[in-house]
Image 1: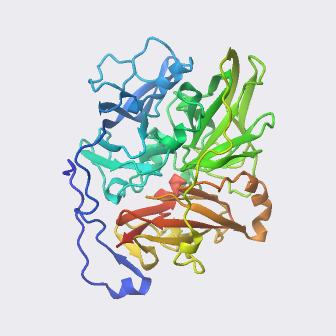
Image 2: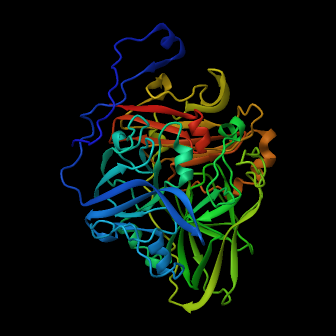
Image 3: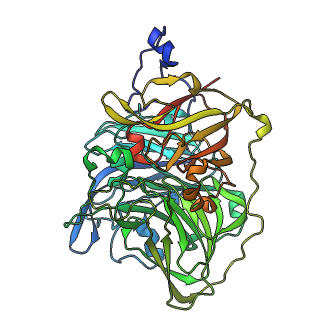
Length: 544
C-alpha cells in the first residue's frame, strides 16, 4: 500500500558510540517499510479530516475549536455517527439542522449548519472488519492519529515520527483485532498532543462482536457514550489554554468548566429503564472519582478492553485520563422528573495542578460532572446477565520474567536546562531506545510501573501502553502515602482488560502483557497529556 504521505526516513545505525554504551541507550531505525503488510480490499472505507471550526456551543456566540469530520465512503452507513445525531435520538438536540458528516459518501454541502459539539464522530465497527481511513490534515500544524486501545501495526499506531503535515494526507488501514469495547482516537504529535486534544480533537471508536451482542445489554439509543472533559473559557466563550508560567507541564491542565460529549452543563434526559453507559475520561489531566449523588452503587460491566466476566458494584469508580468504564444504570425505579447528579467526589494524595489561571478546582476536589433527568416514558427493562463474557486472559505462568519484572519508574529531572518528566530517568527522544525497552515477539512479560520517586511532586500518573491490552496483577503502596491511597483504592476496577492504568503517588502496579502479531516500534507514556508532552514517553520495540 502506498501512503500519500511518505514515511520519514531514518538513518540506519551501523555502530554504537561509547556514550550510547555508557547509558544503555542507542538511536535506532524505527520502522521497516515492508513490515506488517496491509490487506487488499477493506470492508469499510472512511474519509476523515482534522479541521478548524467555529461552533455554537453557547447562544449568540461561537467557539473556535479543532475537530474531526468525516464520511462513509464504503460499507455500513452507520459506521460513523455524530454526537449531534446521538443527541437527536435522545431528544436533547436542536432541530432543523444538518450534520457536517455525510453517511452516504456524498460531499458535505456549504450550507450545512455547524455542529453544536466539537467531539466525534463516533466510529462503529465490528470485530475482524478491515478498515481503511483516508485522513487529511486541514489544521495549521502537523498532527498524527492514535487509535487508543486498538491492537494495530506500529505504522498505524501514531508513533510521533509519522507526522502528517498541514494539507497532507495519510492512509490508516488495519483489521479490527480487538474484542467488543469502547476505544477512542485522538492526535499524538510529540510536544503538541495536549493542546490538540484540548482544542477538541477526539472521537470514540466502538467495536461490537457476537459475544457482546448475545448479552442482551441495552442497544441503540439505550447504549450511550459519555466523554468527560474539563475546559476553561474566557469572557468570549473561547477555550483558554495557558502554560501556567512553565509549570503546567509539571502538573497538567485543569479546567473549571465541565463538558460531557462536548457540551457544557450537561443534562441527560433518560427514560425509566436500564441503560448501558460508556464513559471515557477525555480530560488532559483531571482524575474523576465518579459516584451517583444519592449513594446508589455503580454497577460496572466493562473496562478499557470490553466487558468483564461478571458485573461488580462499587460505591465510586476512579477514572484517570484515557481510561474507560462501562456501567449498567437502571432508572426504572426513579420518580418521574427526578434529577440525579453524577458527581466526582473528593480524594486526597494528588498534588494540586496548574490550571489556566484560576486553580479553583484542583485534582481531588469535589464537583458535579453532569445531571440525569428521568422522564415518565417507559420501555421494557432488560435483565443484567449473570455472565457477561469470557476473558481469555494471559497466563502468569507463561511470563518469561515472572520473578524478575521489567521495571519502569516515573520521575522528574533537570534535562538540558529545563525540568522534564521522565521514565527510568530518560525523557522522550524520537529515535532512542534503551536496552530494557526491547521485547520479543510471542512472549509474555510482567512489567512493574512505579510512582515512588515523587521528588516532592505527589502526582497521579495514568500509564498507557500502545498496541495491546494488559491485565493488572497487583498494587502495593508505600506506607507514607497510604492515607491518600485509602481515598481511591476501592474505586479501582482491575479485573478486565486494560490499556491505561492509574498509579497513585507511592504506588507500584504490576501488569501482565503479551507481545504478538506485530513487530516494530511503539510508545508507552503517561496519559496526563502535559506530562507526555514534557517528556514522560518512551519507545519500546517488539523484535522477532
